[in-house]
Image 1: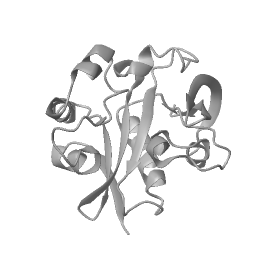
Image 2: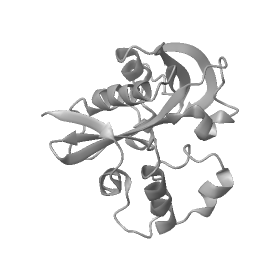
Image 3: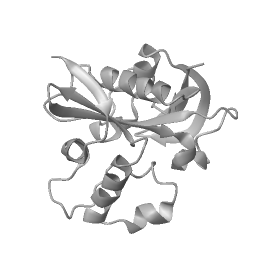
Image 4: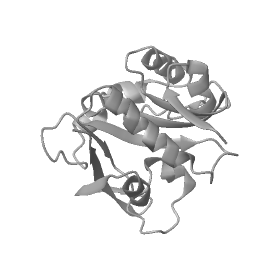
Length: 191
């Protein structure tokens, strides 16, 4: 398996990882945290969500990275400046300082490709992407599950162990809980 992580600039590839089986389905499309307006997030329904992602994919920088096994898109990591996300005003995830950080908030691996270490490739690719865009630091907000199983539908935020393996350190507790596990603020300084 030769995994390559690239910027998410091809909408069809993003769709292959994040898109619904039915075009009219109201799936997240990884917009819940990416959009700064909760009104916009709630208003976007069905195909409008995919159309909004297509707009974001066309922007510079795009909204994340895609992992490829050969030419097949097999995973996604959302990464963008925190200022352009709902984390900029999130009351449960603290700001620890005034550093202009990038956030990694979603890591998704396609069924059939899980258990192959792709989350590690995706997180490393997200960090490299942020570094290439001159980020000072990258933050993530994973669950601190202490090795216990995380429900697959809630695993998208990653685990503390995943972020620690990538060199991140815990810098703060949060008031956020997901799947019964506390979320922690992990950071990797890129300066």
